[in-house]
Image 1 (cartoon, helix red, strand yellow):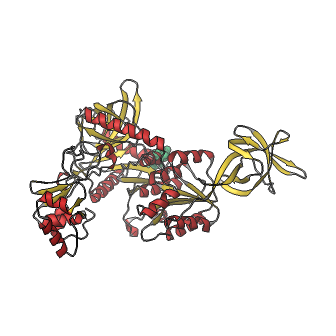
Image 2 (cartoon, protein in one colour):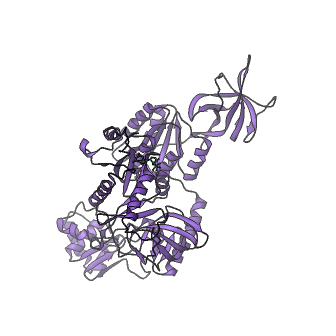
Length: 617
Ligand code: GDP
């Protein structure tokens, strides 16, 4: 329990029993406050008189007791949870606050179970790392040793995850390596991974995707275990790998950190047992627990339409137990579990916490990353699915977004935001680092600026997905997103802020933190064109034969020239021609000749981006 600040020892013990009881909603006639077997159960804030009635203690006694505690209250005054707790204890009741979450929003239900019902569960592991460092080989080597040891019967099937038994304990391994799946899931608010196994090839060291994987793991608050792979190779240098990782705050135990690092080879299989030992050790430290006694909830890992069997989904049961005859709701669809099998094709009757299973019986194909929840009755499942479908429709109509600077502004004013997550992309490593440091320095007591990733280069898919998953803003410094990335960002509701002057960028963030950000004049890109021919014309300069790839270009408007995502020049569009004629504008899908005032260094493949400054509605 997080909030037992002002309680006595006794009250704290009592308070530990406040838990979110069942996730079932209250029946309509259920009173919001009542005594049940010596326990006072309530579900909403109460006034002095309401509490008095419910626990059958005169209002005067309550007021008097609080007065003696130094709190003057009146009969209609609302009591906070701490006051209610203290009063209950004073007047001889145990107490319990029920958290009522509408079950249609089961993603928001905190799965807090009665501690006595919790049992140890297997860790869920995702393998990430740079391409070719051996992720797939490690996943396969671990799986194979499973089959070889004869513990798994049937033929292994690709269901997106499997369980490995090691030293008598289970480990759940998600077998789609790489961070695309991981981020796609986090973008949907799902986090299934407890431990990220970061694979680094000992002969290659830390590479760009290694760093991305570290960013992802950290943003998802997953623990990291490093597998230093390819130790069999001649150039293997695990010491170098460890030192390089240190620069990214992944610090081995021998350097004073707490990250377990295991040297291994997927080829010779050496060190793989140690890797599994390390996973179990970490899992033990994390005290991963779940309550097998409740109805199942978890996340869809994969789904597809099977020609014979219809919609098929791999579910990872994260809490509770999924039974073969349960009804499940996923997103807006529901169904009765018809057939439930594990990765070896064996039919299961029940699947406990951290078990991946493939099921059929859903009415359509869900999306990876969707949360699911099981229910005992079809009616319940159907009602919830229908309600969610309606809500989704309303939500789509009203439009949604991840985090925008103007949202942030009102959130800061309302005091509901604590961390502002930012991703920085800059033209050079130096400016990325400088921006990261300056942005983080803007943090105040109540609002913290957290740069979850800062690097050099163009804004990529990966940045947008990371931003979407982490509700982050992207700051581009001297870099521009291309049209495809812009569309992706729009789809994901990610705001990309672009700047060329550090202090302007910092001022903007400062204003947002203070709740004073005003987007008055904003830049609106009219379109982009790609340079496909270069003509050097005497007395005129360089004219670029270009193709408008999106929007439109307007003669006389402001333009910037982009090369590999970086801005190389800013100026105005001096002239725009179709064939020999001067034209005012050229639309997407048409060719044109263009000249940028005072600039002749155009190159093939350059992007000319036209923009205007417009006042925001
Ligand atoms: P991924 O892209 O990270 O999934 O990497 P793969 O598992 O596909 O491995 C890339 C290449 O490295 C393949 O040719 C593997 O055979 C090879 N490889 C993987 N692990 C080892 C290892 O421990 N030692 C050696 N020598 N080669 C390995």
